Length: 382
Image 1 (tube, rainbow, N blue to C red):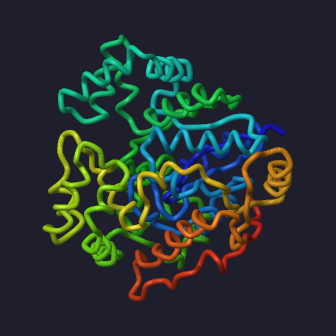
Image 2: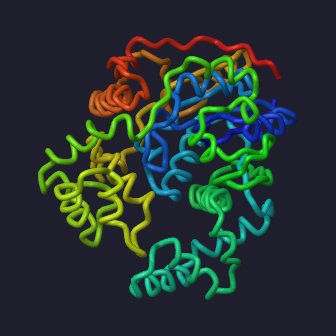
């Protein structure tokens, strides 16, 4: 049985994701490596990781593992590289499936190879020296070398190129499996190919989410930045200059600019507006701010995950899990199981406990949910 991995967030899981899982299941088993309670855009996930994972298995996934928080909050390059690294360490995954607006596997791989050349590195440094943002500098440098800069404009294409880069850099045996991403990433209201960004702005999900997932979503507490903003701001205002200097993504004095904004502005949006520039993107600033909230330094963000956790599985997933534990090189823990690394486990516990403060309810959720949770097998409908 071919085992196919996907690195995902499912924030929330919708019809487009189910379409991808159906494509994967035609060729084998589906293993999801999913961000936990925080996502790469620098925000809490709208639903907690166990609800999102159970929805994925109910809609076709066989096994859902958690992408550790120190991987989930990295840049697109780090997010992709970390996900590929863990799939490699599982020792039993054959392919990596990912979406792409272009849908051209050859062009994506050729672009990845070009981005790994020394000529590109030289061009990139030159572009960055001119003061433009990293995304703009990278696109300009690629086009200067005759590459297709359009592949660095769309979110799924950008991640697809990063997955290809990671496969090449790590000498991975993962087979790239590209699925064309239909619909708009940001605002599509097409029921079959909805935008997760759009869904996060509305309470009405029925048309866009599979019925199996909606049954799990109904009544589940949702989370938002706004709900936890005061707790987040309190943390930012108590931080010392030394703590700001240790944040990830804060090079070129950005940490100092962010520190001043946090001490002068009234809201998170005001902080971002006061710090954002042509050079520094909103997502970079939000990841910085979230790392500050969770107490994650630049050094910690670079840590290799000492283990991964199981979030949900079915009977096929149980068999895959058994194989991964036999042949893989990464420890796999069930929810609530004691972690072997005390320092990393403390970071994980802190991130889990703080997530409850973002609940969109009158009363914040209690801490220590991680320790009380157990993995319950989910029956797949597909």
